[in-house]
Length: 149
Image (cartoon, rainbow, N blue to C red; front, side):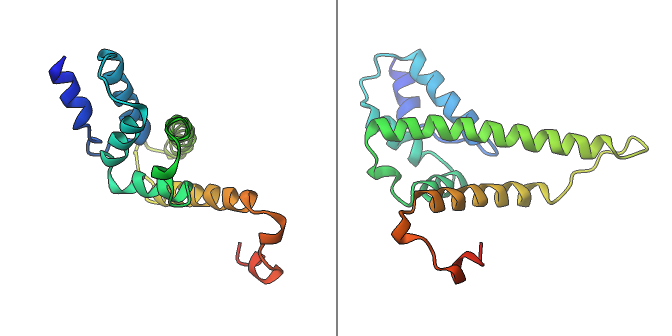
């Protein structure tokens, strides 16, 4: 029991581990130790602080810099939703990459070096759409600004 509590309290994302796998591993630890005694806000802070720079930056971008200002319910729900979205993004990317590899002749496998860039671009595009949708009519960008999008 003490070992599991320590693992929960010192939880970190593994190298090259996707956010959704990291979050699932964290929830699995919590399920193994249901009487860990930690409040939900503390669990959100543990997962946040244990993340690598890239997923933490993505989270902050999606929350407009206020992940730690969310209520414990909002924060945990956000983590759940983000994990689901990332699974969908990875599935879409994997299918696209698989189609590219299978279309090549001669049995050679190649990794397209634009995959990472495409994924980041899609994430940024989704964040921008979210920002635009969250704006009130009085805050809409001027016509000149819309040209930038």
